[in-house]
Figure 1 (cartoon, rainbow, N blue to C red):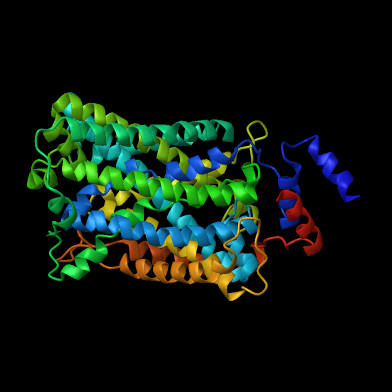
Figure 2: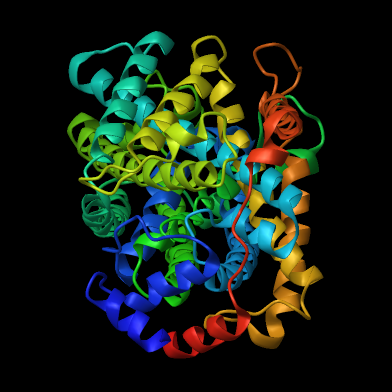
Length: 508
């Protein structure tokens, strides 16, 4: 009977075993599996996007610890994120669904665990869209300033930002195949872009900073007296960049061989981003000609000033275009990941208006309404940037404190249930508990760290609004749980254990 069922599905799907496993996990396949292993890796690599995270927070890094904290922080944070990514990949292999983190938490913990994990994950994903696309708007404004003398005021930057959001919303309406193609192009654009930027910055300028400057110069322009405090908050640049790799998990229902390929996608994306980002930060910092001038640049974007001082106007504009295109790829991938999270969370009845957000287009098999919800809310999140010069840093912190704890919760629950947890074909084996505890402790540390104020004195302009956003989301989640969630939110029960074990053996 079971083999007959598999043959029947084979005529309708590229990989019947993937869809059969999804049914065992409790979901009917409604999305199209057209993403291979490279495409799955590409979406997380595109979302991490060293040409977005490293570049948009480079000015923050210049003030908050300077080159030494940026370089050594990148190395240290990258190592710790590898622990988090590996722990998350192992759980993803066991539960490859679009819901990803919250579904894992629900199955390993309880409905409450899944509920709050989902809301944290959603906050982080929405914050990521806002951070990425607003960063792209800042760089686009800097390019327009060099090309046409455009003055990138907060209002004009917001208009550019909303146009970018609209573009990404439209691109995500055409189905996962286009998303996969764009992400595959994005990988090569990022790798080639980093190589071109670093190569040009090394070959053209007649003057470069010394290695002692790049790896040893400490700068504190935050207003805080404690150097250690500045070092710790300076880790935000790296930690913000190293986020979004759960995109591989969120796209698992559209990935062939998801139990293996989604897990590998997470780990490979972190590894290659770590290498590429380290090279990029070093190349950029070696090429600084005027530190103070770079910090206080009229372009509003310190990397643009590095390009300008080192290469002149023509070279600076060319490199800025490389960065802007990479950021556009990144934002498009993040909208895809976030919309799948909205779709899955609504499928399980967790969001207000779930029956609307879980709808899938009959033509493209894309959650169209979820795409537009993601874009609109991301637009609202960046609105404080109209009034506060430090709001962008708060948006990036929202991304970190929302999504990073959501990574750790499934890992923690896997550790708590280590005797009953049934791993998928991608597993850490006996290393699982060690990797998991390192990951959980690191996440707890950085979550507290990025709730702290980033500048002194603390005023309305310099206040870190990330704790407010976190509190608001947790309050909303709690209220909605009592109003409707405890009745409307329901994930399916995991299927028959024996049948699942047989299916996993076939996949391996």
